[in-house]
Length: 531
Image (cartoon, rainbow, N blue to C red):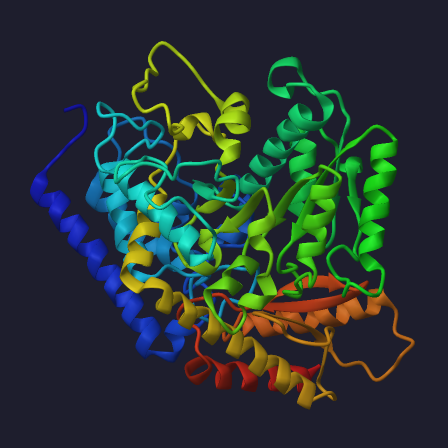
């Protein structure tokens, strides 16, 4: 072998890692400090090792100074055991506890125990899951198939009875345009990128009469959206559609059928089509700052069908409302989309990185394969299984991690009931925070009329109505910095309805009202009174 390899040393290292993991998980469960958010031993605040100033380094002990300024060894390196010691003693303690139960910044889940151990197995076997064939596959095709079926079932989407691989009876016969399939991506950004690419190709074929995958893009597609995530504009930029071709209609999906709000979407679609444009509609399920949902998705779908628009729903975390009968009505109409974005490393609590692209089965052969297919002499999948598509031919990457295994493991271990419990407990925590802030208007002002799901957006109450947005932003920034420095919980800044604000997003499987609310409440009260 080219590298040193000793089985006893390797076994000992794995044992140390397992002990470290067990200790960390136990600490989170039994010690108050284990539930805090800050790194135990953060590195100096410089962005990278090449920019450490002499003052940063002078106060450090020689071993730490050497570690922070290390370079690639010209020799054989320090070896596995020394490297593992650095990983456990220096790197690990420098990381924040963003997988912990009180990290409310962004929308970040933790990692369930089943997903964690499965992710270790992913690295151990190191599969490149791009082909389904008797020669190339071991178990990953079957496990991926099962996992994606479970994902569709979790979100209450219609699917084939036996899965796309047909290994247990084949796909359902008939048209089946309403049936869905699923695949993993690197996250919501990639899923929105895939969705927009698929939507553009669909519009090219069905509206423009052009195969964009072969003939190139003609610049005649616009994206109409409501309260979209920033990744919608990013996807439009990457694909060459253009950020300026993303048109916001904030009222989209927010009508009640009587107030005329949906007429604004219909009018925009007519306007764009009159100008010769094909229209793609991107609807946000669970607005990222507030968790707000559209309340008339079915009308949006009806407009898309009437005017031949492609319809994509970005349900990154909002889609998980369908895990609970208590909240499922928020995500009504999800199944009417052509395609859907969801995110596993958010509320499913599987490791980074994992997203989902959920799509109508009818898109796979006619739209996705022409768009994403990749062929080479060394890539020769079996031609006998032509009823399904190979992962590399319906997605961005030609190399793919076995992301479906942690998904399979967590859904196998905890089932629908486990995810119902996670969603409902997280929403209960958010509602508890929201209600408390409503009861303490002298301390905090919540900026939404309700707390529909798992997000609370708020600001420190200001007695003066003449305070500028710049002053509000500074006031909130000061409060946010103080709150986060306590280590009790971590929040993120945002802007809602033009006002600088603070956001709490609750999406971790370990977060509970019983264990976490009182310390968080006490900290919120203390910090507000100090400002």
